[in-house]
Amino acid sequence: MRTIVFTGGGTGGHVYPGLAVWERLPRNLRDRVRWIGSRRGVEREILRTTGIPYAAIPVGKLRRYFDLENVLDVFRVGAGILAARRLLRRLDAAVVFSKGGFVAVPVVLAARLLRIPVVIHESDFDPGLATRITAPLARVICVPYPETVRSFPSRLHRRVLVTGNPVRSVFLETEPEDVLSRLGLRDDARPVLLVTGGSLGAQQLNRIVAEYLEELTRHCTVVHQTGHHGSILIQELAARAEPGRYTGAAGYDREFAPLLRRADLVICRAGAGTIWELAVTGTPAVLIPLDAGSSRGDQVRNARYYAAAGAAVVPAAGASSQDVVRLVRTLLADESRRREMSDAARRFARGDGAVTIAGMIRRIIE
Image (cartoon, rainbow, N blue to C red):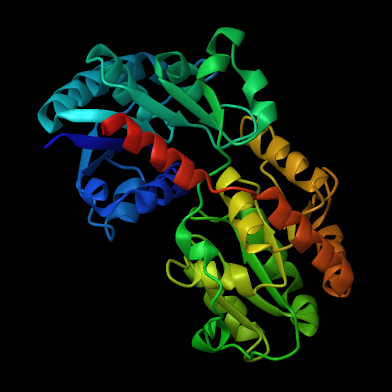
């Protein structure tokens, strides 16, 4: 039986949207999905609970700057292409779906050599380097926004489809859950603030909570996701906080979606997946994007686009922790403003990108 190969990794932002597409495939096609990822990326761990068979290949990082490692990475990418080519042949792949990241490049290149149709999806407002490399090789290029189409050469426009971003079905559920009580928090009239740095955490956001924990917990209940290196910090902050007003965890695998639905306000980064999870849950947000010095600037552009829709607020560049906390307090005190932001968020997330992409994969394989 021919298989459907998914690829992508490096961060959760390259994996979770792929899982959203996998969820929307019919059961008989879900059972035919195989995932090709890297040997050290987070994707192997994320996929462990799904039952999707996983295979790893060598991966070379794609850098925009000079580094001696670039020389070695040329060989790693070459080894990755050879390994992916062997895998795609052995798996008898009928179609490849790429969610991006360094690992996707050799898989897409190998698929092109074998004349296997490729569908790729870009989550950010403007495409990353992996997407720019693989787009000319794809049958269909899925993008989140109409404005993103202009980022590609005109000769590729007929292959570009605006789908929005895929979001896992758990974020679309409407049944209320007693998630606060489950985490040992008081579930009362006080608003709930969720601070999250994503699967890898964010030191800047952790620092804001650490510096202003007492002030924040006077006005709200704080739920704090630190990333996998924050266990000691969580213990220190829990010892300082008023009982029932603070809890933290490295990750919220099962609780994250109900927490996002329950939160009155979120402080977070501006990854593309995070923005669409906020949008489908209608959760108002203060976005603190990674700046261009720490990334390619994609989060800054994602944040501006989303804030322009009225669904979030982005502090001024260089804003201090105190400025952020002052903004948070203002929003927590203004229920009408948060309601307007929530309505704007839901308008932003029209359509279901996961259903659209899953349907396209189904049509190709059938």
